[in-house]
Amino acid sequence: MITWMQKHKKYLVVTIWISTIAFVGAGFVGWGAYDFNKSRATSVAKVGDIDITMQKFQSGYSRLYSFYANNLGRDISDEEAEQMGLKEATLNSLIQESLLLNYASELGLSANDDEVIAELVATPSFQTNGAFDVKQYESVLKSLRTTPSAYEAELKDKLILSKLFRAFNLNANEIDTELIAANTLLNDEISAKIITASVIEVSEDELKASWEKSKDLYLTSQKYELLSYFIPASKENASDEKLKAFYEENRGDYRDGEDKIMSFEDAKPALIADFALKNAKRAALEEYVKIKKGESNATASTLLISNEDSKNLNIDEIKKAKIGEVLKPMESDGGFVIVKVQNIIKPQLKSYEEAKEQVKASVMANKTKKALEESAKTALNNKADFNLSAKVSKNDTEILGLSAENSVALINKIFSNNVKDGYIVFKDMAVAYEIKKQNLLDIEKFNTFKIAFSSNAAALKNSQLENGLLSSLAKRYKIEKYYK
Image 1: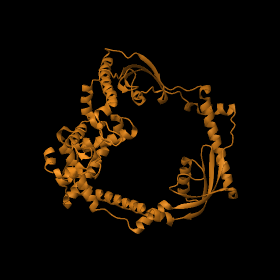
Image 2: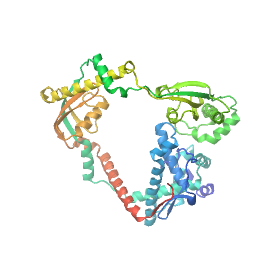
Image 3: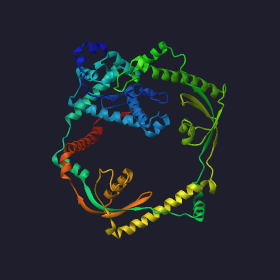
Image 4: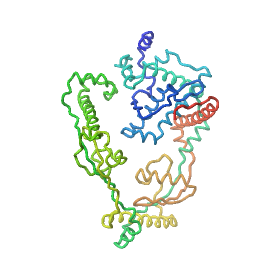
């Protein structure tokens, strides 16, 4: 790669941000739990003339995994990934990409080395002080466990697909734009009345009768008796020499608010904490093996009841464990904790006194809802009392002084029914309404947002074109799947 870049030095002055490659920033996932068909050692599928390599599959899976893990704010277990269908989604996405690449090749579309270089040097994650940095490039790819040749091959495919989509790009005409706008700008003029809940009285006899009828619904939480062993992350013995080596190995992870790599000194506080945590994890794994073999014991006793009482433990992992099982170290409170499930106490029926407050809340909610429904029906028979009015569109988020959540619910109710009046009941109020007038298109708003409507219409047309094209190409090129 370095030789390749040296032959094209003129491109190294390019500093304009052409695009951000989705690959950069994605984490990498271990593959010890995945078994590939040994007879297909290098590919997971073949589409037409294109092999989908195992490396490409792993890279795609890693990006998808990172996307969901980042959104959830935590790692995803193998079982969760399986339930979410991440492997299938990755393979299907790569098959669709390969179908399009086959077609692009048939049309004579390609990307040359100069185009790939221009894209590489314009990628901010590969730059230092606004200029392409070969060492930074290699460091980022190393952290992602990929090679320049593999990354550049993927980048070339992306450039080819970009050309294909540009070739088939459809623009929206006036009718397309107006149809999208009409759906968005459709608005109703309504009159309405807000009915507030009155104070509900509930007798002791009502509560007992309700509890007797549905006592099976009121259970204690499942409890877990745990033994644990905690290993703190010690920040001692973190010499500058060790920290600098750790920094060089992971420097891409330490960035400032402008996404620039921090200097060693600026990153040092975070490096000390991360280095200590890394050492604590290693020590915790060693202790975990000892406890599992019976060579050591977890002794701190804990009674864990629910998420609210989780004590910073991963309760989802604990819920899946069996009695006597030792769980792998979990990060908790500046260190790692090893947990052994001593006992699982199943949910029990609550007594009347234990369940009384829950029963009371349920009975009051039901009586309140029923009273509000009756009042709303009565209000619809006397619309002269409707003292509120509003112009409502699908995109509104607040109407009639209601909360955003209640406003959206009412708007959805209005636009999802083919009747001129109705009501909706909330927790402590109801709203009765009547549609007085419908307006299909707000010309002023249409002219203001015409460009956005046209863009949305074009995006919809191109999405439909892509779906139709993929369906046709799936019949045109042979698809062989080796990975299941």
